[in-house]
Image (cartoon, rainbow, N blue to C red; front, side):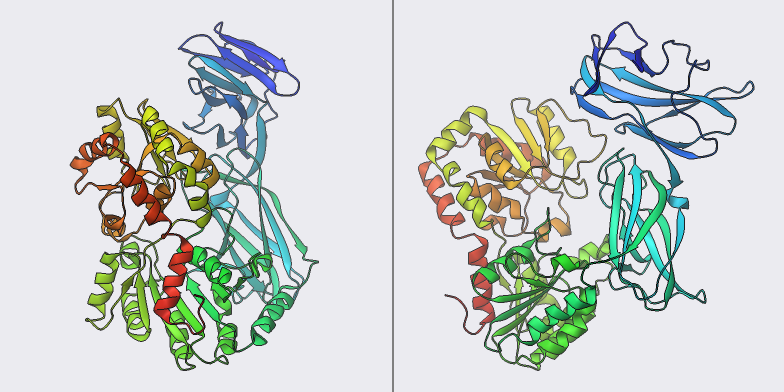
Length: 625
């Protein structure tokens, strides 16, 4: 057995297929040692836990396969150096099962220890050791064959599973050593230049980031530089990046085929072009208002071209529903063909992305008789003020507002802003967000008297959405839970802040799909939208209120968006009012009339209805009835 219990209260059982099952019988702590059976941590062990490579940066992790919530572990790696020097101890930070450090010179042997705290059981595997280069000091230069499309792979390992926490800056170099124009396959930042994100979603496991890229025809070398984007995570680059020629259909051929589809699209076909800050249609985890509406336009028989904020890969060009997607860097090529289409059976929608490309495209297509619209989903000026959406220019937004035929906003506050910046010339229409049609269908059985009666037995309060403390008011919810122990809370979502101490009556369930949400919400009586009171949140029209209504829930929310128009909605104007309003929402009698009102409202608040409303406002010729 390679793991040894160094404390009487910790029992070990070894299984070939799963590793070691560790059982702790006390609330205190004890230690496990890897390849050592004695407790003299200040003395070098009989055998090293792994072979130390002096001066190298190493990542050591102990995979925890299964664990009770009442037992915690913390990893320690001890390096025993020559001479009379004290051993060097490297502890993993709380919440991390791995640790990265530079092995000290003269290290003779290494011990891996695991501190076990509390009662319960867990299953552990053998330590995993990777040597590499700390991302902040990593650089690589790879020779290229000019004119070839390339596939690049980079292996990394990280201490935390933080999405988009590490990236590689990319520069193509000519044979003379001069920097060349950036590739349109890559994201571009004024601060970073061209870059791509490394895969760091899984902590303590080897991850591989891959990229297909077409370099400048004159490029003879590819230079990569590491950048740790979120400092809490530590990333190690392993080995040398792998580079090979892409053997599939060339990118240029696929782009040409897609442009030819547009070139030969019949002039009588209805076409909507969406220029957005949203992710590509078909993104595995994120679908914003433009994505939802694009799918509904397509179901209504309208051709759709989608410009997402991020770059489009070849396999994303045409979605399963027939939506055609282009990268923003290709807009000039697309506009040449769009300009050849005339008349108001064509609609251009700028969705919360009023940059210079949107402005010039609006001018171009209006001259060809197109209908144009500005859709305002967020308070972009406020995003810019707090450090996001650095591209935003209020003057460009004002010019877009003054040029388009129609403006649609998701909330009255945003409508008032547009009315103000246009000096009263614009007359925005509020078109709220909506619930997915599939969720409305799936939640039908929860919008019934029987479902309400079952929920009254549980009286659980729930939340589903992003959990960042930038807008989720954790202090408010935690203090309310502590002051009201008869309430039970269940939290679903991504972006959970680290080191939160949740009271016993708040349970974090992690991310869940809409299908899982439907099942979990059977127990909920009230859904929460506890956002902090800021200009950002006041302007938001939260999708989750429609999702709550789709499964028959009341909502307790901060004042924002169009929530005051929704049934079964309890609004607290000040944070101090939150506990009182929440208790009222829990304890008010749930009448049959309220259930009928929820059903009547949500059946008209699906994305299909919103899409038809948008088409009616735009007066797109030949629109679906």
